[in-house]
Structures are given as structure tokens and as C-alpha cells.
Image 1 (cartoon, helix red, strand yellow):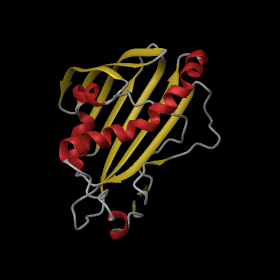
Image 2 (tube, rainbow, N blue to C red):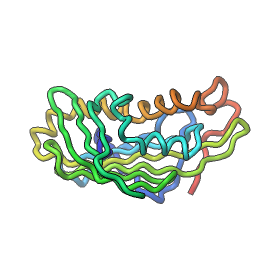
Image 3 (cartoon, rainbow, N blue to C red):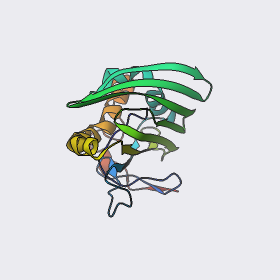
Length: 207
């Protein structure tokens, strides 16, 4: 799951306030001046979803199924696992580039999934963190504040240049792909039903 690839935007650090968007869109942390070289890029998004922590965590932690719903993931397989940790191999493709790599994945049920990969062809380092926090309880059901953050470094400026536009498109579809998977498994997000944004105050902060 160091598979979460994205455009050059700001990194969301654990412990920062969790602010939900009011328009049902993923909130992206845009990067101003980036202290990294052009080979390094950062990305973060956050959103309140109308699913339980257990439901969202189960989708992110089910690495074997990524190939079924991530359009750029060609293969996903857990190689070895034990409580709280696994090794997973992923093959990704976004022409003209593709890569296979093994990620070391840390799993803390219902709160965190973090993966780190350092053996890819395209990347020197690829790290992705998902954080799940309890959201407000609405009359229609519970909610979860979901954070996604990724930092990656290309092995060369050539790879970085070739992949720039591709990763921008991946970033736009990444969070929505996982959200769509939740919808297919658990039904509609109760916060995204008609008029829900008018009934509930979605602009809330959870520190």
C-alpha cells in the first residue's frame, strides 16, 4: 500500500486538527513552497465519510482486493502476514510507466494503515499513511474522519518528469476510488444523500 501515488501537494501530519469539508469533496492540502527536490512529492487529503471506522479500515487493509477497484493497480498480493504487520507486493501501471514493489505495512485496527516501500524501480522511497478518527454522530448514523497522506521520491528526474501529469490524474481518482469501494460494499454514504449537507453542519473540527 505504498501504492498511493499523487500530485505535489502538502503533507498532512498526524495530530493536526481534522477539518471536514462542507461540500462533500476531499480536502486537499496544497503545497506552497516545497523544501524537497523536484524528485520528491507530497500529497494529502481528508474528509468526513458516513461510514464506521471499521468499515473504512476494512477496505484500506484488504490489500488483496486493490486490483479490483483501483484502475491503475494491476496486481496486489499479501506475501506474508502476522498480527499488526504484513508484506504486500503490488504491480501498478500508468503508461508509459509501470512498477512492481514490496511494501512493509503496519496495521492498527480501525485507526491506522501505514506502508513503506524502498525497492521499486520508479521510487527511492514511497510512504503512505491512512488515519481514521471518530467523526460526529449524526441522526442518520456514525461518521469517520479519514486522512490520506503520501510522500514519495522518484529515483531520477527523468521519471519525475515523465510521471508528473500521470500522477496528477491518479491523485484525482485515488480517494474517490476507495470511497466508491465503500459504497459498493456498505451502501450509500449517509452524509452524501440529497439535502444532507443542508441538514447537518459538515464544517466541524476534531482535534
